[in-house]
Image (tube, one colour):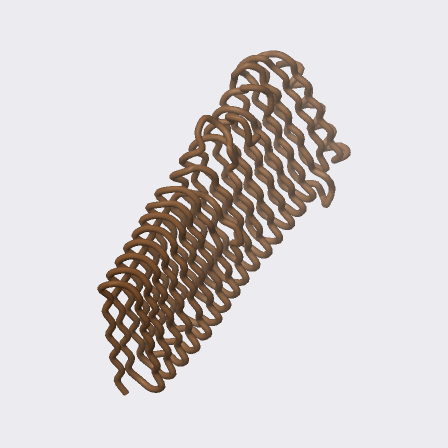
Amino acid sequence: MKKLTFIFAMVLAASFAMAQNTATTTQNGPNNMAGVTQTGTNNSVVLQTSVGTGNEATVLQKGGSDGANQSNIEQVGGTGGKQQAFTTQTGSLNNAIQKQLGPWPGYDVAKITQTGKNNKGEQYQKAYNNTAELTQTGNDNVSLQDQRNSVDPKWNTSIVTQNQDGNNSKTLQGGTNQYVKVNQDGMGNKSNVDQQIGGWNLDGNKTYVDQIGDANEAVVLQNGARNLANLNQSENRNNNGYWIGNGAKTIEQQGNDNIATFSQIGDDNEEMIYQNGQGNEAILEQTGKNSYGYMTQSGNGAADNYAKVESNGDYNRHFTVQSWGDDNEINVVQTGNSNESFVGQYVGDKNKAKTTQVGNDNKSNVMQQQGDLNDAEVIQVGNLNNGIVNQYGSDNFAKISQTGDSNFGSISSTGTGHSGTIMQTGGMNQALITQNP
């Protein structure tokens, strides 16, 4: 402890004299504790190596005067123990890397807080109840929180908050019941959350990504079952391009030029997509059973929306709604058992809807109301299919083709220039066409 106090004194004296502080602390053994306080163009390296339970390191750095603050903490654990690392940086050109490694170090916590410009933070942790927190406020921030994504690193938690200016965040985790929360607020934000295979079990991962600002982009990959992912994107050029995993998922996009895509493979899936704005595109693909889907593109200034749903599996249902828009198009393909599809297009122009279902007990309901140049097509091949198309507006076209058993088809049109076609091949089919001028 005397050695540690001497380090503090030297660091503070150097900071007042020259503002070019450098601190190096190396400790080997159990029950280590290191603290560094620096003010002015600081550098700090803390390395603690132990077999035991005692490591803890704290570094506080303030003010680089457009110079270099940086901190490197590495705690290499042995067989179990508590490792904690804290770094707080305020100033310019900050850089903090925290490594807590080793086989089975124990109950790790790592935390980085950076305020300034050109901040960079990296945190790696391996094995057991790891928790990593990073808060970046300022310009050109980059964050990577790894938590050593294989094998059996256990119960990891990562929380990342980035505010303003070109933030970038990537989080990879491996284990069971992992939790990731990423909040990005500003311009040019990106986020990549992986939650990789590892641990005893792959189930129960949770991901929350909240992006508010311009040109946001999120990519989430989840492996396992009963995972939960929630993404909220608001305003301007948001993109969620790649989303794979099992469990409940929610994407909410408000703004312009939004794109949402996710694919689910597995069981007990549930998903929702909300889009509000211009140039939205939503694509959802499901393979598995007990899946539920709901996509809507609607609201003020909704234009150029496109929605595609492909679900292969059992007990799938899907509802897709487009409203208040122009140039909307919906394409739904379901292959499997007990599928049900509802497509609604309301108060729009140049809308198109197409539903193809191949399988058992399929149902389809397509509604187009108060629109122009609407086009609807339902093709069902299989057993006990049911297809209904209602069109209100002008220049609408409807086609129902059913091949199989116990199919029912109905076309109802009100408006101008409607054309309806029903073709049925198989047993016990029924057809009804009603057209009103």
